Amino acid sequence: MNRTTAHAPLAALAALVLLAGSTHALAQSPQLDRDINPRPAAAFGSSPTNFFSLGNRVLFTAGSREHGAELWTSDGTAAGTTLLKDIQPGPIGSQPRFFARVGQRELHTAGNIALGEEVWVTDGTPEGTIPLGDFAAGRIGSAPGNPIVIDGVLLFSARVCTPASPSSPADTLPFRLLTTDGTPAGTVNLGDGLS
Image 1 (cartoon, helix red, strand yellow):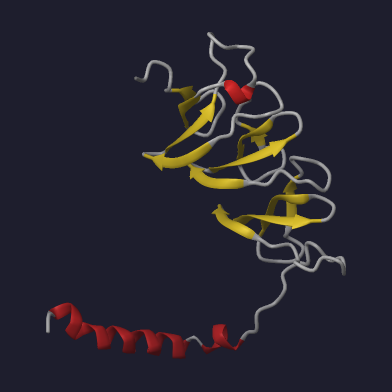
Image 2 (cartoon, helix red, strand yellow; image 1 turned 180 degrees about the vertical axis):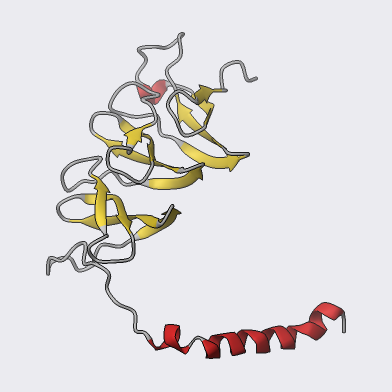
């Protein structure tokens, strides 16, 4: 038996002792924080997903009949659980996905009728929730994807208008590699010239 295996029973016992000591946390029953989609016809509820912490709040995607799937925020109380921003007004929703944090900002993709699907950035406030850019001008959007954070910057792929194709339909644009520090000014197209 190696040292790691020999210590496994001790680690399990320590975990049980810690759990037994926290009876207050175990004695509390789970509670509904807020019913985001309270209508009786909402058989599937609000389907909260994509939980992401930002500062002392949690951001997440949830759906309702009024807003569709949008970005919500919560401090863990019913009063502090609110729609962060209605990016696509109406019941369709902006369908936020691909969440990543860069510094004190959260980035995600979302779509609306004006821009299509683009990268959005938020500092956790409605006024600080903005599109990072309109990379493929028009309503189809840049179809951003493949996000990864490396050394404090986000790399992602997107369809991008270039000087050679400024007015091409978005669905014919090539995908490019972009990087961002979470600000529009700090977003750079790295894809031009890659071979």
